[in-house]
Length: 212
Image 1 (cartoon, one colour):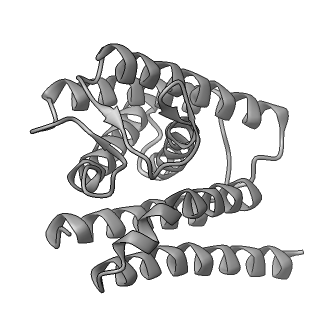
Image 2 (tube, rainbow, N blue to C red):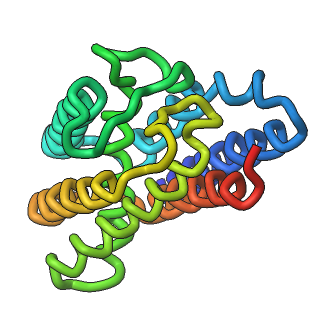
Protein backbone atom coordinates (compact mmCIF):
# COMPACT_ATOMS: atom_id res chain seq x y z
CA UNK A 1 0.00 0.00 0.00
CA UNK A 2 2.82 2.43 0.87
CA UNK A 3 4.43 1.71 -2.51
CA UNK A 4 1.17 2.46 -4.32
CA UNK A 5 0.67 5.67 -2.35
CA UNK A 6 4.24 6.79 -3.10
CA UNK A 7 3.81 6.17 -6.82
CA UNK A 8 0.57 8.14 -6.77
CA UNK A 9 2.23 11.09 -5.05
CA UNK A 10 5.28 11.07 -7.33
CA UNK A 11 3.11 10.92 -10.45
CA UNK A 12 0.99 13.81 -9.21
CA UNK A 13 3.98 15.99 -8.35
CA UNK A 14 5.53 15.24 -11.75
CA UNK A 15 2.34 16.29 -13.55
CA UNK A 16 1.98 19.46 -11.49
CA UNK A 17 5.50 20.62 -12.35
CA UNK A 18 5.20 19.44 -15.95
CA UNK A 19 2.14 21.59 -16.57
CA UNK A 20 3.50 24.66 -14.81
CA UNK A 21 7.02 24.49 -16.26
CA UNK A 22 5.64 23.85 -19.75
CA UNK A 23 3.48 26.93 -19.36
CA UNK A 24 6.43 29.08 -18.32
CA UNK A 25 8.60 27.86 -21.20
CA UNK A 26 5.85 28.05 -23.82
CA UNK A 27 4.71 31.55 -22.84
CA UNK A 28 8.29 32.82 -22.47
CA UNK A 29 9.06 31.56 -25.99
CA UNK A 30 6.21 33.62 -27.41
CA UNK A 31 3.36 31.12 -27.56
CA UNK A 32 1.09 33.05 -25.19
CA UNK A 33 -1.94 32.69 -27.49
CA UNK A 34 -1.73 28.88 -27.31
CA UNK A 35 -0.79 28.31 -23.68
CA UNK A 36 -2.81 30.87 -21.72
CA UNK A 37 -6.25 29.80 -23.02
CA UNK A 38 -5.34 26.29 -21.76
CA UNK A 39 -5.34 27.62 -18.15
CA UNK A 40 -8.69 25.93 -17.32
CA UNK A 41 -7.16 22.58 -18.31
CA UNK A 42 -4.20 23.18 -15.98
CA UNK A 43 -6.54 24.16 -13.16
CA UNK A 44 -8.71 21.11 -13.78
CA UNK A 45 -5.73 18.75 -13.70
CA UNK A 46 -4.30 20.30 -10.52
CA UNK A 47 -7.69 20.18 -8.79
CA UNK A 48 -8.21 16.55 -9.79
CA UNK A 49 -4.73 15.62 -8.54
CA UNK A 50 -5.41 17.41 -5.25
CA UNK A 51 -8.72 15.58 -4.79
CA UNK A 52 -7.00 12.26 -5.56
CA UNK A 53 -3.86 12.67 -3.44
CA UNK A 54 -4.82 14.94 -0.53
CA UNK A 55 -7.40 13.27 -0.64
CA UNK A 56 -10.96 14.56 -0.40
CA UNK A 57 -12.24 11.21 0.81
CA UNK A 58 -14.98 12.03 3.31
CA UNK A 59 -18.25 13.94 3.49
CA UNK A 60 -16.68 16.28 6.04
CA UNK A 61 -13.81 17.25 3.74
CA UNK A 62 -16.14 17.71 0.78
CA UNK A 63 -18.49 19.75 2.94
CA UNK A 64 -15.73 22.14 4.06
CA UNK A 65 -14.31 22.37 0.52
CA UNK A 66 -17.81 23.10 -0.82
CA UNK A 67 -18.39 25.74 1.86
CA UNK A 68 -15.25 27.62 0.82
CA UNK A 69 -16.21 27.25 -2.86
CA UNK A 70 -19.71 28.71 -2.47
CA UNK A 71 -18.68 31.53 -0.13
CA UNK A 72 -15.77 32.38 -2.43
CA UNK A 73 -18.06 32.42 -5.46
CA UNK A 74 -20.58 34.65 -3.66
CA UNK A 75 -17.96 37.14 -2.51
CA UNK A 76 -16.43 37.28 -5.99
CA UNK A 77 -19.90 37.76 -7.47
CA UNK A 78 -20.38 40.77 -5.20
CA UNK A 79 -17.00 42.07 -6.30
CA UNK A 80 -17.34 41.49 -10.04
CA UNK A 81 -20.93 42.72 -10.30
CA UNK A 82 -21.16 45.42 -7.63
CA UNK A 83 -17.52 46.44 -6.97
CA UNK A 84 -17.88 45.43 -3.33
CA UNK A 85 -15.16 44.14 -0.99
CA UNK A 86 -12.27 43.81 -3.44
CA UNK A 87 -12.64 46.96 -5.52
CA UNK A 88 -13.81 47.37 -9.11
CA UNK A 89 -12.69 44.61 -11.47
CA UNK A 90 -13.85 42.38 -14.31
CA UNK A 91 -12.99 38.82 -15.26
CA UNK A 92 -11.47 38.07 -18.64
CA UNK A 93 -11.90 35.08 -20.93
CA UNK A 94 -9.10 32.71 -19.93
CA UNK A 95 -10.41 31.19 -16.70
CA UNK A 96 -13.14 29.06 -18.20
CA UNK A 97 -16.90 28.87 -17.70
CA UNK A 98 -18.51 31.71 -15.76
CA UNK A 99 -21.62 31.99 -13.61
CA UNK A 100 -22.96 35.53 -13.85
CA UNK A 101 -19.52 36.89 -14.64
CA UNK A 102 -17.50 34.80 -12.15
CA UNK A 103 -15.44 31.79 -13.36
CA UNK A 104 -16.19 28.56 -11.50
CA UNK A 105 -12.46 28.03 -11.09
CA UNK A 106 -12.28 31.15 -8.92
CA UNK A 107 -14.49 29.50 -6.34
CA UNK A 108 -12.48 26.31 -6.64
CA UNK A 109 -9.29 28.34 -6.23
CA UNK A 110 -10.52 29.83 -2.94
CA UNK A 111 -11.20 26.35 -1.58
CA UNK A 112 -8.02 24.80 -2.98
CA UNK A 113 -5.74 27.56 -1.70
CA UNK A 114 -7.32 27.43 1.73
CA UNK A 115 -6.71 23.69 2.00
CA UNK A 116 -3.11 23.72 0.79
CA UNK A 117 -2.02 26.76 2.82
CA UNK A 118 -3.94 25.49 5.84
CA UNK A 119 -2.11 22.18 5.57
CA UNK A 120 1.23 23.99 5.36
CA UNK A 121 0.52 26.31 8.28
CA UNK A 122 -0.20 23.30 10.51
CA UNK A 123 3.46 22.37 10.23
CA UNK A 124 4.59 25.77 11.53
CA UNK A 125 2.80 26.02 14.87
CA UNK A 126 0.20 24.40 17.13
CA UNK A 127 -1.53 27.69 17.87
CA UNK A 128 -4.69 27.91 15.78
CA UNK A 129 -4.60 31.72 15.55
CA UNK A 130 -1.01 31.73 14.36
CA UNK A 131 -1.91 29.01 11.89
CA UNK A 132 -4.77 31.14 10.61
CA UNK A 133 -2.51 34.15 10.24
CA UNK A 134 0.24 32.22 8.45
CA UNK A 135 -2.23 30.54 6.12
CA UNK A 136 -3.94 33.84 5.31
CA UNK A 137 -0.61 35.56 4.62
CA UNK A 138 0.39 32.74 2.27
CA UNK A 139 -2.88 33.16 0.38
CA UNK A 140 -2.46 36.93 0.11
CA UNK A 141 1.14 36.48 -1.03
CA UNK A 142 0.03 34.18 -3.83
CA UNK A 143 -2.76 36.58 -4.78
CA UNK A 144 -0.21 39.40 -4.96
CA UNK A 145 1.90 37.38 -7.42
CA UNK A 146 -1.17 36.53 -9.51
CA UNK A 147 -2.29 40.15 -9.67
CA UNK A 148 0.89 41.15 -11.50
CA UNK A 149 0.14 38.95 -14.52
CA UNK A 150 -3.65 38.67 -14.38
CA UNK A 151 -4.43 41.53 -16.82
CA UNK A 152 -1.90 40.43 -19.47
CA UNK A 153 -3.16 36.83 -19.16
CA UNK A 154 -6.75 38.07 -19.50
CA UNK A 155 -7.68 36.51 -16.17
CA UNK A 156 -9.07 39.68 -14.56
CA UNK A 157 -8.29 43.38 -14.40
CA UNK A 158 -8.69 46.19 -11.88
CA UNK A 159 -7.67 48.86 -14.35
CA UNK A 160 -4.64 51.01 -13.59
CA UNK A 161 -3.73 49.47 -10.23
CA UNK A 162 -4.91 46.93 -7.68
CA UNK A 163 -6.52 48.74 -4.71
CA UNK A 164 -5.34 48.09 -1.16
CA UNK A 165 -8.85 46.97 -0.22
CA UNK A 166 -8.39 43.90 -2.43
CA UNK A 167 -5.52 42.64 -0.27
CA UNK A 168 -7.23 43.61 2.99
CA UNK A 169 -10.37 41.71 2.01
CA UNK A 170 -8.32 38.77 0.80
CA UNK A 171 -6.56 38.57 4.16
CA UNK A 172 -9.75 38.87 6.22
CA UNK A 173 -11.66 36.27 4.20
CA UNK A 174 -8.63 33.98 4.04
CA UNK A 175 -8.14 34.25 7.82
CA UNK A 176 -11.76 33.26 8.49
CA UNK A 177 -11.45 30.34 6.06
CA UNK A 178 -8.20 29.27 7.71
CA UNK A 179 -9.76 29.23 11.17
CA UNK A 180 -12.66 27.14 9.87
CA UNK A 181 -10.15 24.79 8.23
CA UNK A 182 -8.22 24.38 11.47
CA UNK A 183 -11.32 24.09 13.66
CA UNK A 184 -12.73 21.30 11.49
CA UNK A 185 -9.40 19.45 11.77
CA UNK A 186 -8.81 18.75 8.11
CA UNK A 187 -6.01 16.23 7.54
CA UNK A 188 -4.27 15.50 4.28
CA UNK A 189 -1.07 15.09 2.32
CA UNK A 190 1.51 17.82 2.91
CA UNK A 191 3.55 17.03 -0.22
CA UNK A 192 0.74 17.75 -2.67
CA UNK A 193 -0.10 20.93 -0.74
CA UNK A 194 3.48 22.18 -0.75
CA UNK A 195 4.11 21.48 -4.42
CA UNK A 196 0.83 23.00 -5.58
CA UNK A 197 1.72 26.16 -3.67
CA UNK A 198 5.33 26.25 -4.92
CA UNK A 199 4.36 25.55 -8.53
CA UNK A 200 1.96 28.51 -8.57
CA UNK A 201 4.47 30.69 -6.76
CA UNK A 202 7.19 29.88 -9.30
CA UNK A 203 4.85 30.33 -12.27
CA UNK A 204 3.45 33.72 -11.30
CA UNK A 205 6.71 34.83 -9.72
CA UNK A 206 8.53 34.23 -13.00
CA UNK A 207 6.11 36.42 -14.94
CA UNK A 208 6.24 39.13 -12.29
CA UNK A 209 10.02 39.32 -12.84
CA UNK A 210 9.80 38.75 -16.61
CA UNK A 211 6.41 40.17 -17.67
CA UNK A 212 5.02 39.44 -21.12
